[in-house]
Image (cartoon, rainbow, N blue to C red):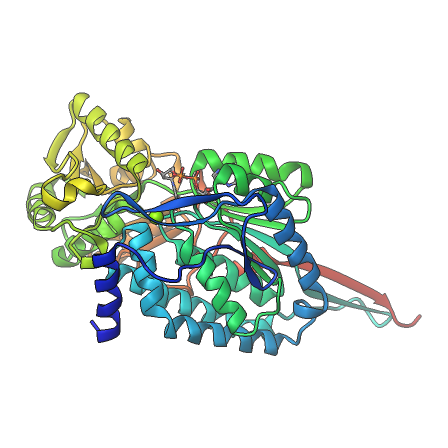
Length: 499
Ligand code: NAI
Ligand code: MG
């Protein structure tokens, strides 16, 4: 750890606070208080106490942000030379990198995630801006052969002002993943971070402004889903919504978008399988499994939360996995433990209730299955890393998203059974496959109903790979060049030139 990072961490750990956090919404190029004056608190999940407060926005602040976006669109941003937009986003990437330590400490304290993970997220956010910066001047259309007398072409226009509803599990990553392609396409944006983790999105808006983004192009309004999120997604001045969060809230957002016929992308989480065959590289599969479900304490939409394992290999694999899971140390995210806390008391209670109910129905607990409360942990929101094996695949613990460090186990004997189990939930976000058999890996990759499939390396790939779900996991794709399509619309222009 660098000396400067260590100093920031020590300050945060000893005082429980971080100086000079953003204290207003970022609207029209500056921080502003809520029009109502309302504020709310954000918590440090490692200690279960409030560490800072922030502006709690409502419809009036959303109106101001959307109006700022609409004003900024014309002349200032949409009509800027694409290469110049690219340079500004490239500078933003560099500035995120320069501010990485502070951003990561804030992200860790606010969300509970491990500092190393937060640093990875911040570097990922910089990389996201770098990736889309290079795309600004490559959003070119086509020409269509219409014969000698006509000329036809397509233009990829920015959709306008876009809304981004951000969850608490990956605050800066999700913000960057939506904002970078929207800005690259020439849109203006209004983001609403989760009320549990508002700070890094606000800091990012400030950084983008420092990088040269004109006033009003990027606006961030903090506050609750009900007070600030709902008026944003129902706003007639919004041309596109990108929502990441729960299925229930996503359905509500879709309904709120309908009266204005606002287009949208829904990224709604999952119950993703990790299919492990006996012929796999066991070390790779163990490491992949640990990352898939215990990174960020399992609070990942694309977490590999279901181990689908070949029966003959199950005993060997589970013994090794359980050993690794028991060795995970728990602690405050800023101390870089094996695993950090979960994000909120609400989330902790949800996890606890779901596992307890499964055990009551007869599920076998291989390890974990309770809150972790010893010593300092008692103050924070900690849940033991857990492996649970219900007798039926229809059990709620297999079918419902827990969004915590809870892995379920399902065994199969044939490839057909493996596929049926992998596809046996209402979700279809991602899937992992571990096998040495190339043909089998690709047969499953073809037949599994998911938006992204990882072979022999869970979470492989980066911003280059399109990401998004099928079925109840939502629709639309973020990341990659496909992610740009959310923020552009095609216009066809046909002209008669002679005849
Ligand atoms: P949520 O879906 O309610 O919250 C996500 C975001 O939506 C937050 O910014 C929230 O303020 C906003 N929001 C809430 N109501 C809204 C509304 N009516 N209009 C517009 N925006 C609104 O999820 P919550 O309550 O934080 O977590 C509940 C469960 O959702 C978790 O246990 C987990 O299973 C799932 N979840 C999935 C995520 C994913 O990455 N797909 C992220 C967060 C939660
Ligand atoms: Mg917080």
